[in-house]
Length: 120
Image 1: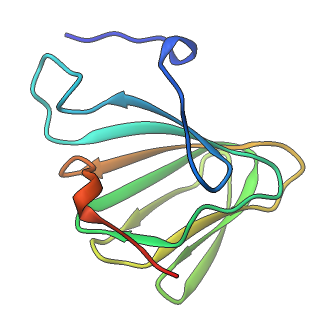
Image 2 (image 1 turned 60 degrees about the vertical axis):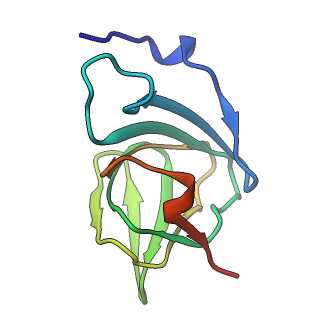
Image 3 (image 1 turned 90 degrees about the vertical axis):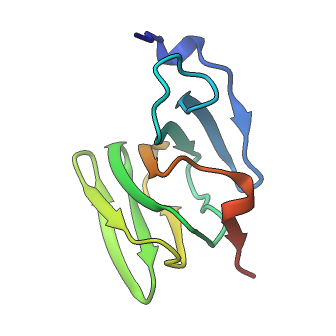
């Protein structure tokens, strides 16, 4: 079993104005899970880098307002919104609200840097 408090998890500063907290990942979980889950904070007026992953992703939005762009479709998101993103789908998230946009991202199989492709 593994237990964590969000505010005690080390933060990683993303290039695009995101603060990332890797909650559970096979490399930091004793139970040997195959997925990863991270908490993201996207600052007001910022957007994440357009990218695609070899893995599938589920985004669950906790706070704020924004837009998630997947393939050629855009969805308005707010607290309680959830979206499944198939593998290799170009995507990015945009904070359109007046506060930070917070969300969880579950990646299965777990996120690996070699499996992520930045789109310019």
